[in-house]
Length: 318
Image 1 (cartoon, helix red, strand yellow):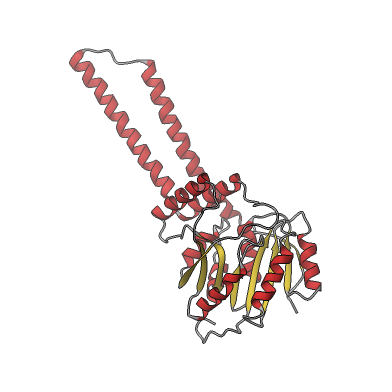
Image 2 (image 1 turned 135 degrees about the horizontal axis):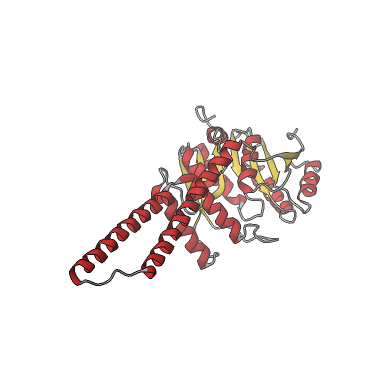
């Protein structure tokens, strides 16, 4: 599709990863119907249920029976949003694929601009947050720190305010599906595959129901996955710290010897030894821990386990 004339009537798949979003789905389905009906006659929704424990599946299947074009796919358990997005991309076969959250915070009103950007030649139209006024200071500071670390040594720039709300050309979807890694940080993968990208500012809407399922621990785990997946900076930092510690130890040893030869001061005994051992041991254990995180990710890749398992698939929309 990207090498031919792009038409407004090209097919469109909307991928919605969902986890306990039963209360938000009816309004979102209604918004999508109203928005997409005027944009293209060939569209459908691929809803990936990431192991929900509420009525998410019942709401999706009821909408399907009522004529809403949704393919409902339930994963066997909660594998995480990155795996759910990967499952949706694997099932999407349209010329264009729209990624959205199912919580209603991604406004369908921005979709016409994304589709127009695609018609104008963009392979990816990405929504970027206009501001982070709705976030707390800790999260804002953590976000700046995370992207500062990742972009300091990564070969490709990952936009700090861009998320999963984006429109992808078929070529981009095929490129993402071809990436084999198990530890998937989708925001980094979007940047890694490249292609022509257009950024559109937006302000996330407030959730109508429920709360965010991303706890602080899950956000930290996702951030650490992103750092280890896209940069070797932590390893380089601890290599530098090791060199500095070794240099300081040599300098301190030389100082003690010179002081003893010049002034006859006795060389300090066990306090110096104990403090030096504790400091060097702490540095070694921390560096081994960081190295272990990278080795653990190699282990995950070697096991070759699937990213997700499908428990139910309603099948393509007829």
